[in-house]
Length: 398
Image 1 (spheres, rainbow, N blue to C red):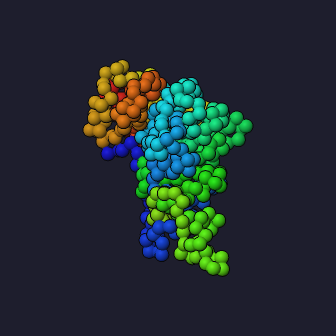
Image 2 (image 1 turned 30 degrees about the horizontal axis):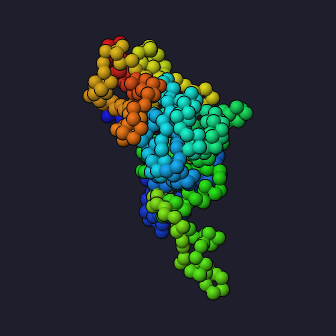
Image 3 (image 1 turned 120 degrees about the horizontal axis):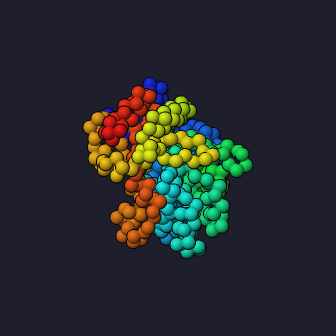
């Protein structure tokens, strides 16, 4: 079976994990810091904080910005559940923005409409999502956010390795936080690199960095300057007691282990190779699918963006080909080809429908009706793409 996505683990990765298992630290050890420093260098951010998953990273970001029940957060309707759920975890309300039907990315028009539906004073954050590995203009989002006094959290879970050209001509990496306060990554096995499960937040703000470190570790601090209980924290000579720590507010056990970070560090060293393969396979898909247009075509490409291509999504006119999406997926599966749909728009999920009622977001619903993710992962070869496209063509009767 060719799945829609899959990790690629080699002997170097296995050896890196075994080395940790035989060492002194299984968690909270040197591999955590080494991975964080390597990730920060890779994306060009000052700081990176690893954690247990991309969902944990999104939650930590909302906590770090002190979002609460008085806040509204703008989220594009086409994304994974965790993007919006992170706002709800802290009690904030979600305002869904529409997306471009050809890319699934939040549109400026959709963002501005969402902001009009929210109280200006309540909008505290905007969470653009770099869907499938493509990025929207973070400069535009930042400009709009500044007009509302809102912070920006980039959901970059699909976009490790994506770069873009800013209006200044500078090439920046997603995760550099060039136009955002925080950026979030996921290292789930189907993502650009795998940690088993894992995530990270990058930022250039030292205050947010220190808050993230505390919140991912139960809210614990050992920074003497932050201690409130002077009578308990210090001995009679004013020296900090070596066992002492404090919790000023509850945090979470969202730490990533040395085992996970050792795998992540080994995988990160291979990122360029993985990106090259993903981009090559994407280009090959594009060429082979041209004869099937307009019934089947790739999503539109964003200007000034060099995507990491987490997913390979095609837009299919199922009425034109005479096969429903479900039936096509079943037939492809019978030929050993796994596919998926990313994603059911969040405003259609029962929880959000009950909370916010029926919302009309035509761009999101148009994208969703046509979208299908075909297999794409670094372990694939060109022959696999040939097989997928040939099978698709045969099932369409083209």
